[in-house]
Image 1 (spheres, helix red, strand yellow):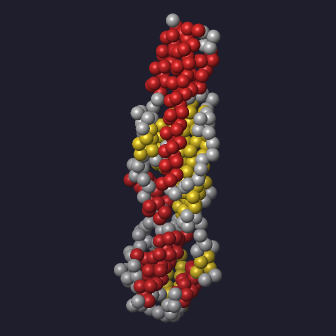
Image 2 (image 1 turned 180 degrees about the vertical axis):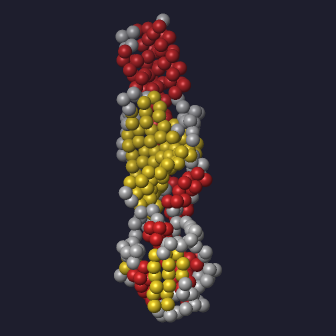
Image 3 (image 1 turned 30 degrees about the vertical axis):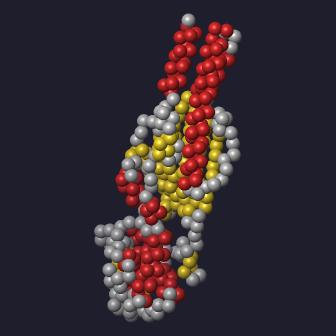
Amino acid sequence: MNIKLNFFLFISLINWYLTPLYSQDFYINQKSEASNLNYVISTQWKNLNLNESYEFLNNAGFTDIKITSNNNKDIVTGKIPNKEFIYLRRLVFEDKIIKEYSDVVMFFQPCLLYLANEIKTRLKNNPTMQEINENSYQSALKEDIKLKDIFYKNHLQSLVKDGINQQLLGDINDFSFKFSNSIKTEELNITRNCSLELDKDNIYNFYSERRVSINEKSYSVGDYNLNNVNQYDLDLMIDVFLLDCKNHNISINKGKVFASFEPLDGQTLGRSYGINNDNKIELKIDPVKWQNSSVPKRWYLLYHELGHDVLNLNHGNGGKMMFNFADRGYSWNEFWEDRDYMFNSFKKR
């Protein structure tokens, strides 16, 4: 009688633990139906500044936002509050420039097949329980396969969304599996990972990740790679700007250069003083704010100020690069696009 009672409790435990499973952009509800998760990340993440990362995650509904730093790398994480799964978003910055983000979903579930098989083995010599044992084992096996199959098929659909058509190699009926597939575009690398592991407590650990990284590029003006130019040599940076003008068929009179690092009030990062005076170039840059700025932001600021000082452009001329400078981050893509617009606008005058 005690054996039958224990088995009844075991069957009840199986039903109670058939809770939803989740993957990177979908989950499986208690009816064993896949439903979408819609924690879409804004396309503006590629232009994100480290100082904006907290607000960026908070506005998207993430909580428990934390930042960890190691040498030149900063990692900002946040999670979506939910009792049924763990959803994490991770932003990775190197030298204050965002390099990648990842969305991760983790969930945990007891391995019912393992438990059913263990009880079946222990009671295999009990004729009274033999049929119940077998039925319970087959029921657990069926549910185990069903849930893994739903997870696997929806993961395949997630791959298709990113244009990944690679085949997954492995047996989803194993107690553990791991798949990793990726695609590379001109600007981005996209990797989707999913795995299942059985831990020492016979608990299934499901894991799903979508990781997107920005491809590194060489950014050159003539023989200068802007990533490698010493950004504490303002005279050299000004020479690069003048070379860039020349390469765009913009004739410039250099004049005498006065460039220095000096503290500036408020949020002002840089200021020019030679607008409408083609006999000089005069810039002052705040050293602390400069130190805390990313490489593309420094170049963006320099081109903005030289747009005043060399091209004699006012705010409102030359497009976004000549907009009143804001305390925010700038990506390399923004820098090149806005520089091209400013130069082309100037040549049309």
